[in-house]
Image (cartoon, rainbow, N blue to C red; front, side, top):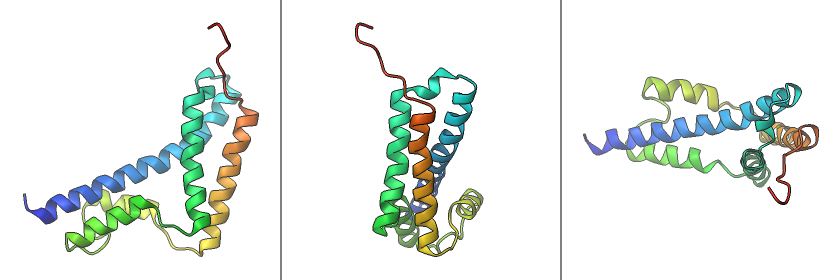
Length: 136
């Protein structure tokens, strides 16, 4: 296997990880609200909720600081090193790119990410996090 093929496989792997990260952030909030309404106790798991809050917190912070996601930077760098045009490649890469990357003014992304982050914070009050009691 030549170097450019390996680099493109690594870029595709990063793209899949990026997509899974987005799914985690978005679907977790849906599941938290749904689980709260249906009394699913696991959605109040402290570790899960902290990881979810950190994930969206990083996204919101990057948006406010005008940073590009490191996953995007790494993926593009690998594609460039492989000599490939960005997002002209495998089937998986093509469709994940279509779902993840779109063009709009920066303020729209900042507003969307901040609003979503506010919903995640609101979920902590509407579906409280379970804390362990002393002695258990």
